[in-house]
Image (cartoon, rainbow, N blue to C red; front, side, top):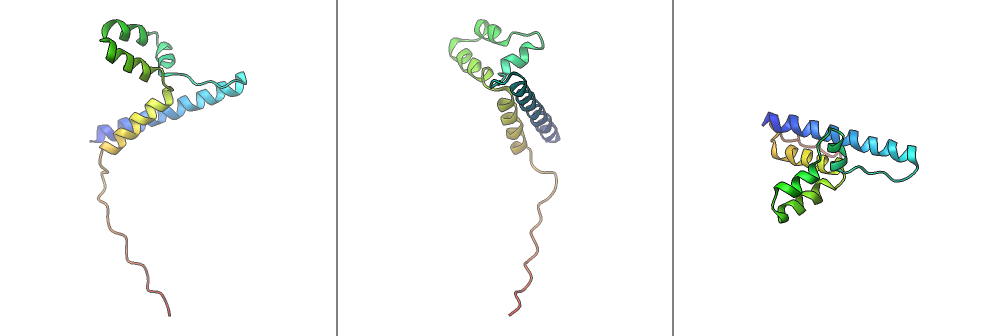
Length: 104
């Protein structure tokens, strides 16, 4: 389960970095910029959308294209939080101490 905790941390950090990059691009261009997950993957030289449409059945390909055309930071943050929920906390949760008595 430590792998899920580590992976969730990495995904959330990458999502925050992508959100910051979109914010900086918006401030530089003075227009609203949101990069999709496809735009981020294309930076690495891989065209995900074309390969999905060729290799997958039409129903699954449409759903996958809808996901990769969503904002990259949103998808990665969602996956990071989902992995964080799946992985249990390594520490045991202890009960809070009782509150002090109210003076009367």
